[in-house]
Length: 110
Length: 110
Image 1 (cartoon, one colour):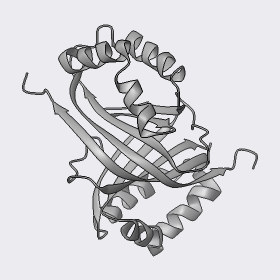
Image 2: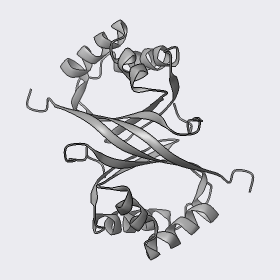
Image 3: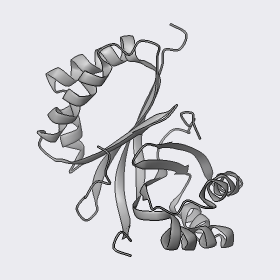
Image 4: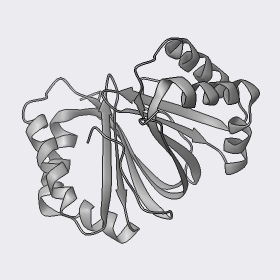
């Protein structure tokens, strides 16, 4: 989660999930970790990146819209979504986008 | 930067910039703030979201690919990009994507 995702050549899809937490964070960290592990086992999953300050941003990468839809409908994920709405998130926006081009720079060896 | 961006109905574009900092952060915070203010004055700019832990994620939203290209070629931005390569970033990946659908939830009033 804390590294830049290595993704294939575009096109592929991303889900940008931007969220503000509510005051109720009980159970959130465990569920978030479970969802990462579950997503990694989903067909078409390409990677995930996440960072949180006041705002949290999680970007997951997928092979196709059909793979994103299958992940949305995963039973355990549906339960996490329900708890997200009811308990954990004060607000969120989720955006589904088609990655058309990308560019990577790695200067670590400099 | 620290709030969920209010964006128009899709389609629109986003630039997902995922980065790991180098050890040289001198001048970075000031330049980052300058670039936010400059982007806000660019034609076609729709909003920006940002969060950093070990990984930093900044997502900017734009009306069109042409607007993104104009921002890329802005003279002050070019200088910031040069310093980013040379000094501030250990690694980054930039992805340009077309937002096809979005969904927002606001439970703050609950």
